[in-house]
Image (cartoon, rainbow, N blue to C red; front, side, top):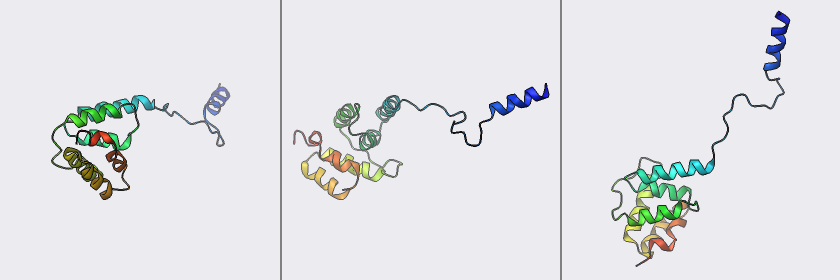
Length: 129
């Protein structure tokens, strides 16, 4: 009996050279995670949520809808978001409200390495000017 228990225990413990992970949860579906992030950004009253989403996922399926929603919001945020990029998001929001090519070009020149510099070049932000 004791020998049987030792054998069972030894068979259930991974060997030192084993590459099998122990109790690791399966990876999340990236499309579901992206959709949840977008839903959270939409539910925020501040524009920063959508601007941050566009900075991180400019080519996602949700991005065009996010741009449309953001473009329909007439007022910029009044304070930066509590995020390391909060100041950049606020500057983008202010340039988007001005809505001129010059405002967006000035934003891009001020933050040339930021993903929103590429976002600022999209015609949607200056359409109708």
